[in-house]
Length: 259
Ligand code: B12
Image (cartoon, rainbow, N blue to C red; front, side, top):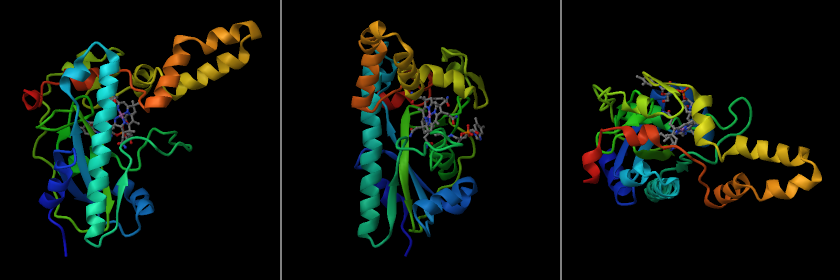
């Protein structure tokens, strides 16, 4: 027997994700093979969204935005895990899929393509539409959400894409990008964006190691005590490595949700 998406949304909503929809695997042909690898016989993908605090991601204090991100990802994980266990309790198979990491680091993806494309799946499930930023924009919270979800063999009543997008095309996201990485219509220079958001991420870690290895012995202690070294240590400890939230924070859509 199939499951109604409103029942799934109730479970997601009571576990940290107030926005939730579902889409059939057939409607996601680009990722069907990968999704089948996660769960053979998978029929549906549930997409859910956990909101950021707008005040936190708008703050000039990067640590509070990072802390909020850890928390929002935690909520998405809690909700997807709860939904998966709830479906298993009903006799289905279900897997909570990582919202971002762990992610396939092998070539040619190198961690730049998730097992499920949450934005694409969210648009197909009708929980939002694409913004000029390329992010999924929900009516409730704009793009200030973390997306996650579940792959299951249950048949779930489908959402359908919205007739338009909640994006108002004001282009504030494009103007807000400190790297000039956005040019509207979802176009993004991933390298420019990555240079900012990952300034304490993998590439920074690799450059740090190379600098350390190549440094003369008397310089090595200085490098290991550098600001970058401390930041990297902290990022490993917290699991957060994002340093920019500008395109999410600039969006006017969904602001009333935090009033
Ligand atoms: C790799 C990655 C990145 C990379 C590459 C981004 C990219 N465009 O692919 C980099 C490092 C640049 C990045 C940056 C950011 N990311 Co990121 N990222 C991911 C990750 C892990 C995988 C994305 C992926 O598979 N990309 C490969 C393919 C799918 O992307 P693509 O080839 O560019 O295809 C896209 C476009 O073609 C576009 N598109 C297709 N048709 C159309 C039509 C229209 C009209 C438009 C406008 C766009 C459009 O949408 C496709 C995706 O659906 C996802 C998590 C996940 N598993 O989905 C998070 C994710 C997309 N990131 C997210 C966020 C929030 C960010 C940042 C704000 C950083 C931060 N502080 O967290 C910035 C925003 C940059 C931006 N404006 O896009 C969120 C998005 C939430 C949302 N509301 O949409 C996600 C979903 C993480 C999460 N679980 O919440 N990210």
